[in-house]
Amino acid sequence: MDLILSILIVLACILLILVVYIQNPKGGGLSSDFGSASQLGGVQKTNEFIDKLTWSLAGLIVVLSLLITLRQPKPSKPAPQPKKTEQPASNQNPNQNPNNGGR
Image (cartoon, rainbow, N blue to C red; front, top):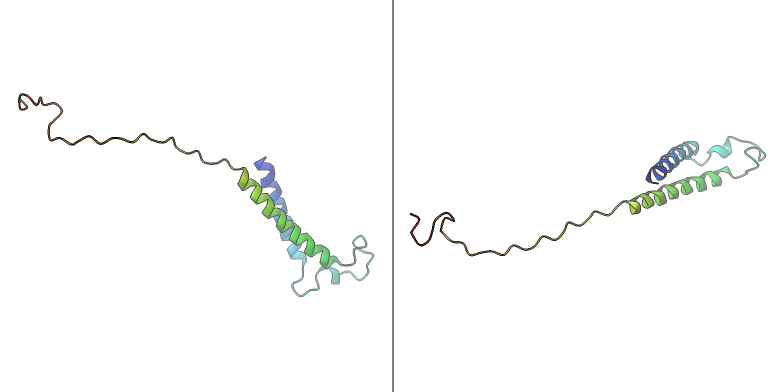
């Protein structure tokens, strides 16, 4: 499922790049290239269509990114370690017998 979502994000990014390249930053854009309203399937306001397509693709990328993030497995918490009780420190060597003074 994550692979499919990743592929959709990549495709939406590529389409978004193409749509942004079509736009003219000075407002002319694709609609100024066509003289009559009968071209492009009768769409008269191609600037509005391209603007809506831009925002829709950007929104789709955000939603799909959030879905992938939410689908990631949560890190497992390590098992709680039992607390070690501290024993009083002694100066004796564990190999020494306290009764014979270490001999």
